[in-house]
Structure formats: C-alpha cells, structure tokens
Image 1 (cartoon, one colour):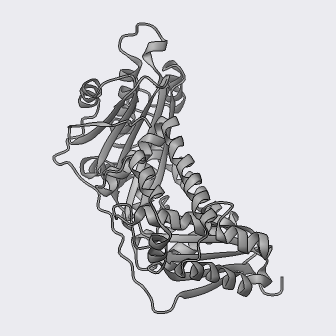
Image 2: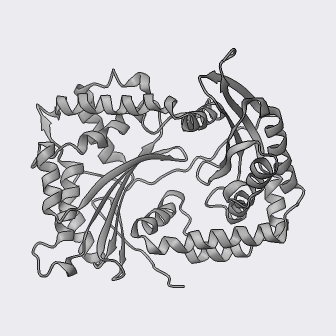
Image 3: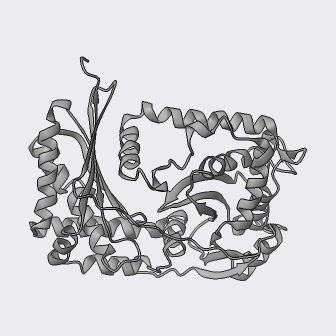
Length: 427
C-alpha cells in the first residue's frame, strides 16, 4: 500500500504540515486552532469562528466575503468546532482547484486561498476596535439556536446528558458550542481582546494536501499569518478519570415516544497506548458494526432496540453505548447489553466476529487514502497525542490483534454511567 508522508516545518510559531501529491485535482487546506476546554472560555471561543465567517477587513460585508470565494473558482470555506480530550478545537477548512487545471496564474490559486484564509483568521471586519456589533448579535442568536435545538434531537440530547453526568466534575462535560447561560453576557468590549489572545496563545497547525511543496507553503504561511506569537504551543491530552465502585444510574423524563438508553464506560487505553488498536477491535466486536454483539443480540435476536451501537473515544478514554428502546424494555435491554460486556471479558469471541471486524476496519482505514481531508484528520492525531501512527501501521496492528488481547483489554473496561431518557409519568 502506498505510504503518504506529511512533511513538516514551522514558521511564525505555527506548525506546517504538507503532503505533496498529484493524486487530486484540488488543494485541501485545514487550519486547527486549539485551547484548553474551560468554562471561562468555551462560549467565547465557540462564537469567534461564526463571527470570522461574516467578513474581513478587506471584505467587511458578508456578501462581498462570499463573492470573493466565487472569484477563487468557487473555493469552499467552512469550519468545525469540537473537543478532543480536554481540548477545544476550531478547524477551518478550504478546498480549491489545483493550479494545474487553470493554466498559468499569478499569484497561484493556492497562494490566494491561503491569503484569503489568513485574512479571515487574522484581519476580521471590526468597528471601533471591536467586532462588528451586528455580526456579534446575529451569531449569538445562531449559537443559542444551535444549543437550544439539542433537546429536540433526543438521540443527541441523551448522548450529551450521559457525558455531562459521567464527567460532572470534568471540563469534558461542556458542549464545544459553549454554555447557553453564558451567551447573553458575551461582551463586545472584551471578546475582540479574547480573540487576539487566543491567536497568540493557541496551538496552531496548518495542513495542505496537493500539488505543492513544503517550502512553497511555508513561505506563503509566513507572509499571510502574522499574529505576534512568541511561543509554539502544544496540546495536552487529559484522559484522567475516576472509577466509581458503583455505576451512576440516572433516569430522566421528557416528552418522548421511545426510550433512549445510554451507557458510558471508561476505556483506559487512549490513542498513544500500545493497546489502543486492541481496544479499537474490541469496540468493533462490541457495537461498531452490523455484525457486532450489541446489534445481533439486542436488536436482532431480542428485538429490543430500534438502534444500538458503541463508539470509542481514543482521546478522552471512554466508550459510549447508545440505543433506542421501548420504555418498558429498560431492564431487559440493560441486562442483555451487560451480558455482551461480560461475554467479551470471558473471551467469548468467535473467529467470524474477529475476522469480520478486522475486515470492516481495514476497509474503513484504506478509504482514508481517497480523501485529502480524511488524511489530514488522521494525521492530526499525531499532533494531538504526540504519537505518530500511519494508516499502514494501524492496519498492521489491528490485523495482529488476538482474542486473548481483546479479552485482556475487555477486563479493564469499566461501566461508569447508565442514563435512561423516558417519557413523563402518565404519558
């Protein structure tokens, strides 16, 4: 299998990662800006990218900002806000046509794309030394609407509540979009200053995949991203957790027709651990795929669940089980799910379960090579965790996993929280 290696450099206290390749007809550009996930900054950090997308010093009106993207041959621009461990991360993304398909162009489209991104991040539209009030007010409403809408998506709401209960004393409980109760108090008098401090003190990484070189990209970044940074900041992954002698069990009531059963488990092996590939296979066998133990036993054999799956978080060190069940089937569903956890602890793993899981995981990993953005996301794990793993390395590791290793890992995974969302009494 082809091994694609990112090349790395640093300028302006920014890490640069470039994958020179002719495989794609576009340039994929990503910029990651992080900070610790904390109550005092989670809401202000979340709203900043929403404001930045509204306009720049050169294109202060949103209409002109978007027209500039059209001028860049319909370049795509977007962002995501998420948490990785106890890190709060904003990822800005741009995709634009490779210069090779446009004929001779000066400056190059890649250069103009990085210039546009640099202006968006470092030279936003301001008035009187602050963000434009109308943009701040509009995006405060955007954030509020997004947070308020969570309760309308009961699957997402139950997942959020399970995390909040499981990590009641840990910043991981915060939604990356911030806290609803903080929105009204966001002040334009201080937000612009907080934004400037964020750029000076955040870990920042810029990725480019496409027909270019590390030297070319480094020169462009040096010119376009000047933020007065004095230090190269790095991420800290905090996977600490507290094991309780008895799992927390919480039942809440809302207007629902279907019960939402979520179970949070401590999965102690994180991305940097040697046992992490084993834990990945464990999760695949437990609830990662349609052939998994949860899907087969809870949904197909017992017909208890409308959906059931498990998801592994290799940054924080947890495994979350989600299911939708008839409300009266709560006890039976908990019992059968618990039986599947015990089966893995006892080493009850068939050859078919193991081979199917490895095959599914192999296919997923190979697909990373088909997408520049997927390759960027995968490589960013190296930056976050300080552990460098290539796709080919992970493929080798998971295909070497044995049943005994899975059983050993299973015995270290502990149930922490059981959360059930049901209908209101009398409904």
